[in-house]
Amino acid sequence: MTTDCPSATLSRQDFASDQTVRWCPGCGDYTVLATVQRLLPTLGIARENFAFISGIGCSSRFPYYMNTYGMHSIHGRAPAIATGLKLSRPELSVWVVTGDGDALAIGGNHFIHAMRRNVDLKVILLNNRIYGLTKGQFSPTSELGKKSKTTPLGSIDRPFNPSALAVAAGATFVARTVDGDMPHMTEVLRRAARHRGTAFVEVLQNCVVFNDGAHKLIADKRIRDNSRVLLQHGQPLVWGAQRQWGVRLDGLVPQRVELSGGPADGAGLLVHDESAPTPHLAFAMAQLEGPDLPVALGVLRAVSQPTYDELNTQIVEQARARRPRGRLADLLAEGDVWTLGAGAA
Image 1 (cartoon, helix red, strand yellow):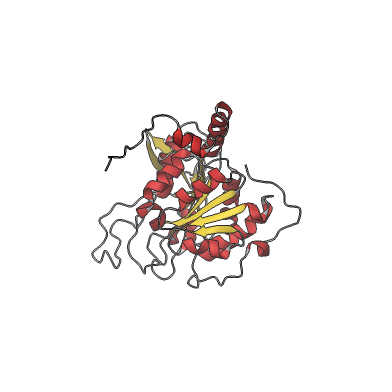
Image 2: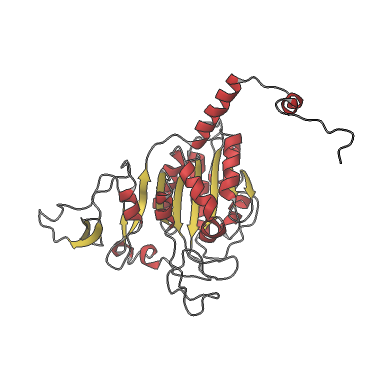
């Protein structure tokens, strides 16, 4: 549980550090940084009770630009370090900022276990489908056939779907947004910040230098309405510039249907339920994609379960109640001990 309500009114400037922001001009990371800096003052948490942890990559410069506590840690290990911090200082609001390479390649093991444990962390994954910091190699989310410096004939690796992976690993909050839609990103991150447990947000982010236009279909305001569906709890999946399409299930297979405006059009459409007790629907929606289906943006799943840090605190309290605090020397000398004789080598 984070400490509430600082006495002074905070603003974005209070969360902006004195470091020069060193991302390429036009990088989507700027929008994410600005959104987070604007959001944090509205959460009612004292500035000294925030901590940002990152790994390695362009996204992992984030802690330098936040005027909070933080750590630029090692490649792929940010979730493990953030977990240790949250367990030792449960009153803090701990955020992890990572990228598709950092989180899903060398950090894949740490990522899935942070999701399943339901540690009270806020995890932002910036997905530009490329290794940007090391100059344009394919990443775990690069599309099949992607030509890059390390795959000149096209990648033969099937890509990870980060949101589907988070759902499958047991995350209690999973959402997706895009860097070019600040209002949508703000609301998604606000929901994540208020969630108790692991809150995972995938931000589809543009790398203007090494993978420009990777998410153009859902980021370009001129065409995005025909390529994305904005999820609303309790509402059917309808999208299109004229809201002319819907999604129905044929068994377990999502299909696009034409909506001509008749009274029967809405019958049987897939209705979003972010709080469904099982993750099957969220997993299916996380994998919607073109050309016939839209990419789903918004909160895919939001359920309440006990957090790892709360359960850990309970276990520690139980252990201390059973046995009072002792001395290290006594602990080392108890139980089975032996003494080496004078003739021992």
